Image 1 (tube, rainbow, N blue to C red):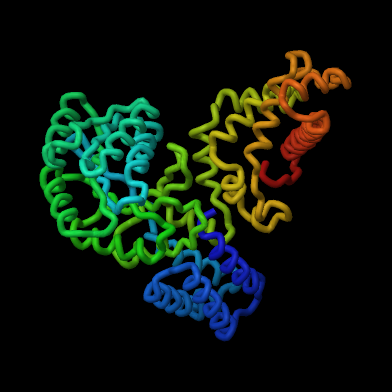
Image 2: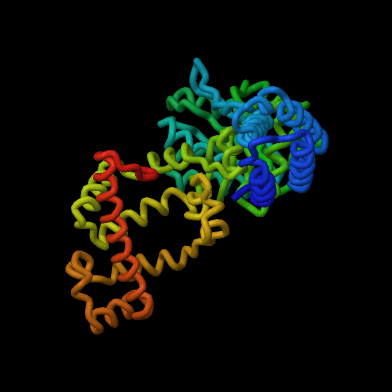
Length: 446
């Protein structure tokens, strides 16, 4: 997860103060010293850290904390609110033009993931908002960029407007807008050229494209792993182009996360989206409050629910619940469930969204081996229909046949059968508890 080191440090610091019935100024001072170090280590801009510590300290020793019944909890609430504010307060939504198409200009340095992000954004607009985007290849200096965008368009089954690399970006933008109006596209996403560093020619050209395309949004794509450099790049682009938003890529990497916490304060430009992986659906809207919750170990249930709504078939989920209640859950159902969970993203990321998951033994640094999941799928697919419905019929020769067919071992098959049996027992307990709940029993999460 992004901010891993920062999250660990802050959560340990918060744990010391959480249960305190009385919080003194000395307690707050000590906590703030640790928070300050944690933020600086995470590569957060020095001035941003200074202002943040000042605001939290003032509130933490003020009336709202000292006079409250649970001062320890109140301090954590203050830290969460200020952390949310630091990252922009409320979610900044994507623009929608009154006169379609809505034009988005993607800018940034080479290597930040601009072209891939253009494809991811188009995918998100279609999937989540039911839009019809047109991708525009306006990076004429890197021929591979045009080819890359066309490849992404093919993968997504989405149109890409290109005039090759012998035509000026201004002309490409002009013709692309005409084409979008004729074809009734409601979004136009222009992938512009980048450089290895900011130079006058680049900025001049981007300004020309801006004056022709009159974009509703200018998104700067920056690599979160570049730390303070990302903030400096954002500052330069903002001063010269007037950005409307930032897209942070590689926030899932081994990053200290300081860029995400500094960009908003330094440039006053909201973070609109974050890239959390290589796949074409690994782009999420940025919610400051949810990110603050995740950093402080409070989970992010709303994002988890949204992921489930997007990737899980509601009818099938209902059917599955019925099967669990009647104990008619088979290996075929298990395979389907596995596929739906996989579509939601890496399992360790999903677990990180559960409140308090970091405190559960064995879950904190869980690394899910994708190969292991593929083995499970191969084993189930090597079973006959009768074996999937009724695993009790499995004998030694059947297991040998399945092991051979799936390229696994009999031990792995035995392990899976045991896990499946344990899961069915757990389901039985949960369904009986949820029935008990209707009679007044309390059961968490149900």
